[in-house]
Image (tube, rainbow, N blue to C red):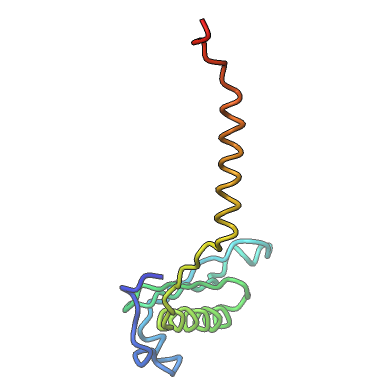
Length: 124
């Protein structure tokens, strides 16, 4: 995730209703198996958190209310992931033995390639 979109953890509401108030709720037809019932109910839910632009959706259940609560839970997890502080990566060094082994392999391959060349014609 981008650091530009990082938010203060204190700004995430604890209450589900307050978090839903910050979101745009979209409903859609779920798709997938379900027969005739599938084409008439809009049970899929997509939540877009307006302050950050983070979006989640759920279409696993037949009930729109259950899908909304699942999407809300996923949104909360994504927002918490955005607020988590990342440790700086410490690059690892290549061990001395591996460097030596790699150089020996390069030298060996170079010798093998030199042997493929036709011999010099300066013997005339």
